[in-house]
Length: 91
Image (spheres, rainbow, N blue to C red):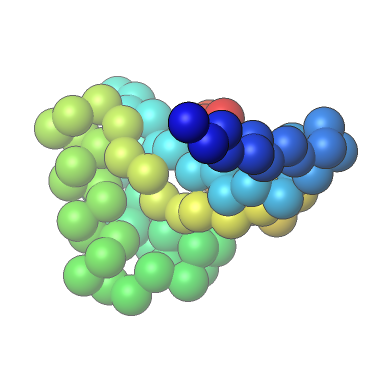
């Protein structure tokens, strides 16, 4: 029987290089228009994509809106927070 070598990722790479997801969380404060406009401006969504994300968030309570490296997502998360949108980064 042949054993396969396990791939190991150094800790520094595992926390910053692997893609993460930025998740938009539903709230009862922001309007659909505000959420859509913000997703277009901050996340570079097109209008249809922003509308779909806003609707999914409203119906399911959350929606992934962006994938990328943690540092990039932290910057976007801060911009969305400045516009009163709640987000989390999934690990």
